[in-house]
Length: 501
Image (tube, helix red, strand yellow):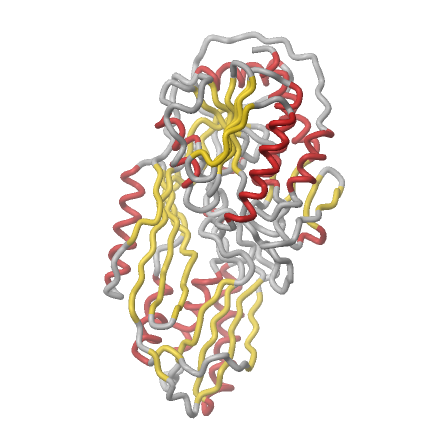
């Protein structure tokens, strides 16, 4: 729920008084990379509360050893640290998105993330999983700052990658400084001063099942190898949502083979299962009529080759597989319920709806990320993003109308308002001027993702806030990688800036 990418951002012309700060000292960033390696020993995927708590305990001990006073379990498991009289509050989140390639046996519940150095980049071995940079590198930089500076405070939050519950439960009397720097952006050319708000929505409805499956053959259809990506900053790129593509395929085949009766057994996302990640791999288990089996399979392959893959010319690894299977339970959605999904899921709201020319980003989009079947219920899920509450409400209305097809209610799981850019953000001016004076050209921007500053700025309206960070590519995917030089640049820039305030 965040991040900054250069293709999405446009500098905003804002005039402030210039503040001159000298910038000659160099700080050794090797401690940051050492801490980042230690951090990756802790599996900390969102909602894995036990593992995130273990990581928080480790953070607490490190901060205490640096001379900080630490308060644990602030709000929903957050960590707060203070050392002296703080000039700046730094903020990062402890959880991460756990994404892995299709077929990987990596266990995000227990396995540490092992990374390699590849030129200027750090990534997981063979790009098997996310590398933990989002936002492990932010946590590492803050720890390093506490080890070398006094008069500093920090908040480490939970649930940033799913509900934002960590930031939402931060009390309004915690932060002492009047400046806050969030270290969760992903492009070192920009100082972020605004972002989309977000709403997580789902609908649950009942379905009927059948065990009368004589004359049917069980098969599994998988569409895999999509680029996926961050559902905020990558949504405008028109990448394949494999979950929707599965249902487009079924819809086409059902209508082209009029005698075809397909009964859905289950639908699954493979690899990354997060509302803020575009589905890159998905599968559907279903029963097809044995008498039409070859005709149906041939039609599926033709529809994929002729009408799905050509829609995504940059997704070279996108592929389909259709295999005979045997399922653990011998039941399926009945014909009425199967047709209800096949006829309609392809038309579920998804993707970018509005593009903001001023900021060169999507300012209204939704990620259709979930179709899950649990006994006699189906759950559909979306993550909406918008630069105004009006845009978020418009998306909600679209989803309510769609859910009416299934006689389903619309549930809001979590919500946060947009962070609207302000012309009175003195911290943004000071930091940007300082960066430019030190030959690190940075510009102000707004991002299509979501940042916890959107929540914190409403709790602390008198505290100026910005978000910055090193270059991270392909966040929320197994291709995630972190730039070494950019990390050194941001760590030095922030350290020098803080030291001379």
